[in-house]
Structures are given as structure tokens and as C-alpha cells.
Image 1 (cartoon, rainbow, N blue to C red):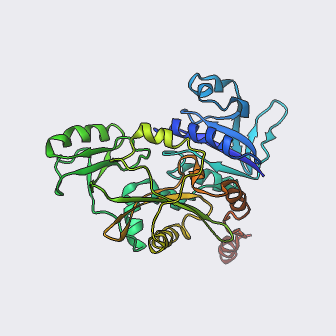
Image 2 (image 1 turned 135 degrees about the vertical axis):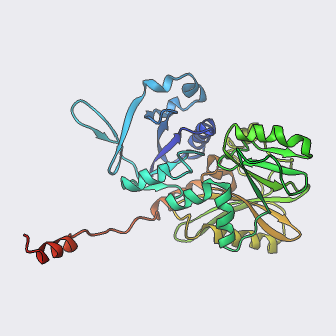
Image 3 (image 1 turned 60 degrees about the vertical axis):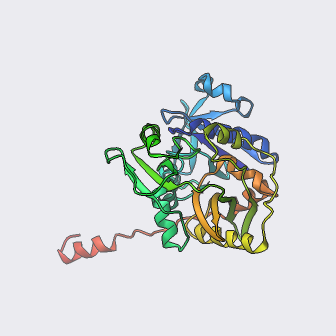
Length: 346
């Protein structure tokens, strides 16, 4: 399989995406890989595998690489005597946050008829916002924790009792997230969150709640990962998630009952199908009093959650062979011709 990994982007999670791409270079041992970097100015660069190091990007050395353009069918290397196509079986969208998860890349890939692994436009639009994710879950009959929403210019007060957790609506990787244990801490936490977003989600912070992660995809059949019980802390801050995203060794499955495992798998499948077909996603769940709650959807999880799969590379290969495609639409201009005929025009 020849796979192009697309990473970077104009996003607060730009560096996380670089870490994810470097990790997949280590993980995908039998796949022929090409790397296309999107810098903060949204220019495309073809990166040699040997240059896939964090310093290559932080130093700006990537700017010496060949620049690419996107046209129908895929990326091309422009040249004085014509353009050379970058041959690939599929593009893996590995851009976290804005650009990658908000639908821009999905729309471009679909418009230019480029086969790609990643959430499609509708799935991106709904899962990029933590608020619309709540609405999606509700429509599917999946429980979420109660919440309030604060906008930048709203009065700085909440109705639910403390402690609460504040989350910028459009960011991942725990950027701008704070636990607020009393009213006197609210102002500062909102200042932090509003540095990154205009809208903040407020949820109750529940001590000791059980947390589980489930990843998976649908190829010609369901391919679900193990269920992970993540490391227990109040929450994983940016620095811890930065390290988390570089994981490339499989973790142990959570020690849970078969009944709970089936509940988590069934809830994941309800969320995934059909909206997220063509992607590998990770859902993070809470379990409280025996009830499963969706915490968030990771439509492009860090390092593609490779560490949760027995055979991640095989799963990815099978997914590339079963990517969804848009139906062909034939335009024959019969409507216009009928109008012209009715008016006596040729």
C-alpha cells in the first residue's frame, strides 16, 4: 500500500499533528509512506521520510522541500515542463483541530476526487464542535453529561454547582481546559479558555468517574480496538496529551465486565455508523452508576490511536480498500434544453 500522510495545518494542534505523523512513520513498517506537510500559511510541502524529525519543522528547514499543489486526483509537483503527479492509494488526513477536523480537508479531498482516510464533511462539521457533538449524541440516543455554554461577551456566571470543568468548544488536546472548584476561580479559567475560542462548554466535574476509550472503523466488517481505561488523573493536560500522542506500543485492555464492554462497543457503533465511514475514530466515554456517557469524539485521534489495535496497519490497509465514494451524477442539460425548445430557441 502506498499511503500519503497529510499533517500540520493552521491549528493550535499543529505540533501534535507533527508528533502523530512521526509516530506513524515508526508504526507503519510495511506501508510505503509519503509525507505532505501543511504549514501555518497552508502551503503544501513534500517531506522526505528521512526528514521526519521535529527539528526539521521547528527550524523552518521544511521550506527547502518541494512545494505541492492539489488538483483533481491528488497532489502534484509543479515543474517548468509540466506537473508530476504524486502517486498514492490514499491520503490519510492526520491534521488535528482546525483544517483537518473542521471539514476543510474533507471538502478539498472530496471535491478533487482524492481517496482519503478521515471523517467526511458532515461528520467533521458535527464532531469538531463539542456543542454540536452533544446534539449529535442526543439525536442518536446516546447520553452526555449536562452542560452550559458561555460566549465571550456573556455574563460570567453559571447555574450548575461546583466543581465544573471548562472546555473551549473547538479545541482538543486539553488546550484551554480548566477545572474550577469554586466561584473565585471562574474568571481566571474563562480568561484562559477565551484565549483560544469564543465559546466555552461548562460541564460538572465528577470525581472518580470511570473513563474508557474505544477506537474503531468499519471496513467490510467492524474492526474495533481494545477498550482502554486511560491513566487516572483529574484530566490529561496539554503536556501529558502531547506525550500520549507519541505512543506506539499497544496498551492493555481495561479489566471490565463483558456486559460493560458490550455497552461501550454498541454505543461506539451507534455513533460511528454511517456518518464516520471512511475514518478511524476514537470515542472517549464516562461510566457513572452503570450508565455510559459520551465524553467526546476524536475524529482524527492522536497517532490514529494505533496503540489500541492488535493489527493497526492491517486495519488501515483494509479501510483503504473499503473507502466510501460519492455517487456519480450525470448532467445532461435536459431541463435547459426543454426550456429552450419551449421558447422556440435552438
